[in-house]
Amino acid sequence: MPARAGEVWAIADGGVADAPSPAAVAAFVEGLHAFVLDGERLHAGSVRHDGARQDDGSLLFLLPGGLQARLVRDGDGLLLHLGEGDPVRLQRRAGDGEGVP
Image (cartoon, rainbow, N blue to C red; front, side, top):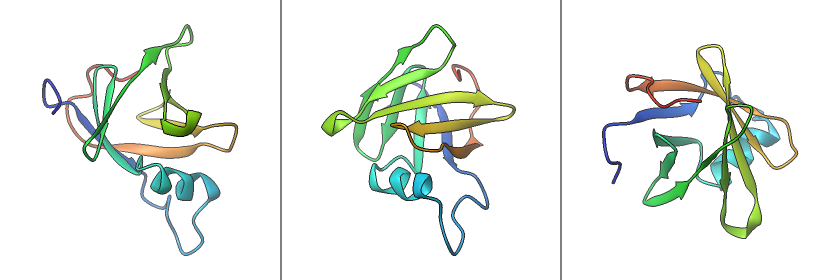
């Protein structure tokens, strides 16, 4: 469980349409379509991923199988980069925004 309430993030409205982007599909496959971000820890379902803050302020997570996920601040939202593919836009659904990159 998260140590505190954390922030709930999910794929932004319009991010999953009739023809979702490859990035949105990858986010669903990896279970990162919705998650709680608690500082540098990401909770997706019952799985916890410990992140590492990067020099550019982003958070980097190593997923099972060796895939890297990176969260980058983008205005009021976040971009989720999975591997080398295009990012998927995330928006905060709940929480105070503390600890967000």
